[in-house]
Length: 247
Length: 89
Image (tube, rainbow over all chains, first blue to last red; front, side, top):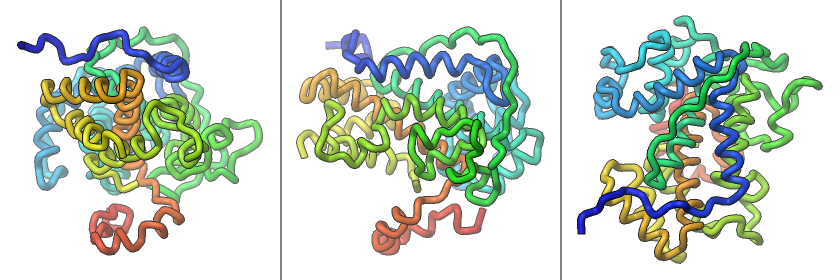
């Protein structure tokens, strides 16, 4: 029998918490950020999608040396070239990023804070589109951008040295400033985007529904999903291995 | 573990581009574990395809306790050859 669809029958039952956070994440993509306006965030999101069919990204992905090909990306023209390069390379070949490339990008006109916010948007789109793609659903249209200016608040306690970008250690959070560690825990992965705290919330608020909350991960006495802990970790481990994830 | 092969196939099918294989993998999960489990499996795949970009793009280091717990395994497999935080940048 000829297959006429790549999706399983809808509607699929989705946990209330997951459905809620997915909808909130889509709206957050279209809201003014900390360093980018809403339209710029959506332009970054669109480039995450464009990277999947970008000829340069495909050549680099299959190349032994991904930094040897300096061609032109297929993009929508709404972002500066340096930001397009950041988005496409992180979206398409993150496993072979180098610290020297990150410094070159930041020295080339994109601020460190913008780089971190862009990374947050890229990861969020990867999660949201990836969820739909995993279920065989079509890509969603982007929400309309909301009006407003970026808040442009750099955390007072941000310091270089821990990672390739400045981060805020849990003990360096200043009273009155956003503290994502209090909500999501203090693993290094939570610290990665801490130069732009709102991006920690934006990603991990939905990620804890996609995966598990920090305290649920090692709570082997309780099953929080329709998959068991071992089944979740097997699936997560295989995906991570396929991605060459070092973390 | 129950349905381990189905879950691995689900992950591997979604990593590729064969739409027919992906559909069969989804149907296999739904048939064996149910639609709720299919949604949860899709969510796990989405999460781990996304979070790796944060780690890779920021060069965040592995926690000390994780590094210590996996020291033997990483040495046996010579995984430090791939450690991008080791100064080769």
